[in-house]
Length: 431
Image 1 (tube, rainbow, N blue to C red):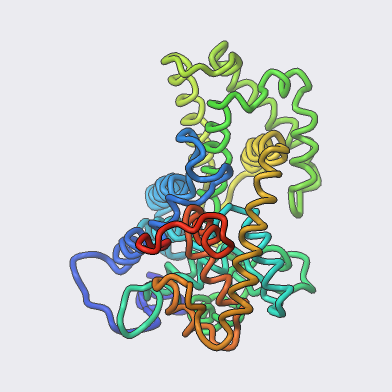
Image 2 (cartoon, rainbow, N blue to C red):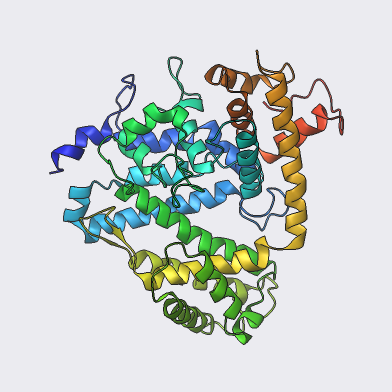
């Protein structure tokens, strides 16, 4: 049995009592609602790292999310099979974890983290100290902005799924070093946040949120690296020749609250990754040409990594419950750092992001100035209802609108608003 403070009924409770029951579990309903939402559909047109639509080889944000959900499901199943008593005490449901994984990036704005950074600065500059953060926007979408019911906004998810979506379960606090850059709720959404966190008074993730977070790290570390390997953008030979010196140094610098033996951990992790790469010579070290042997080697390499990371996960009855050995964390951090070091700092990508931030800034500024008393007349009909949730806060309204668009839609809107491409009056920008 679950302890009284976090019972089965508490976990399955919804903020609004308007549900009709069917053959699905409460968390199965949550999972389906997220997957069929417009916000989830939008992710097919949103950047993972490289602009959506630039090349078929790169993950979109939606493809990334599906892989996070698959890994999250396997992690939760592992917990059910290997840690049955801890799963029962802590409360871990496979479909609740999968629902949280499917929802985790719904608030990701156009143009990836470049768009997120631009919106955060703009909202702050216009007087809202809560800024913009993709995780907080996710929570706002599932609790308020999503369209599903006549009577209420949001998807009306269960308490456990809502809590499972809170990767950073706190509000923004500029005085706290851990709460300045990442947070999972704006104060304007406090009622929903307090409902989700009613049985969790500290800053600890719920077990389902921790599994979602770990699944996201695994997917990011492996699948993005796979994309850029196919493009011959990862210089494996150089990385091996320099003994991973630059990558290890960068991983150490980014490891927040790193353990005291961080250098030893990263050195050992690098050695294990190299040993795995060397199992597939020359396929992984040769320039990628898409041959069948190379594809088999790459798929086997990534499958081996994902399996290793999943199997190393344990569940204990304390804190968030989820435990990942520091050695495995070091491997994931190194893999993520390779992508950041060799791709995200690429001058071509940085130049592209500068232009993307300009697009967001232009639209944001216009919406703030021209939507104070009512939604701007040029705003697509699909977005006008958002104004009702933001009367008196035009910066939040502008951020909500922009983060509801795909990248193609936001570029088209900018083209028409600023005369770059007039388009046709018979062709709506947003359907």
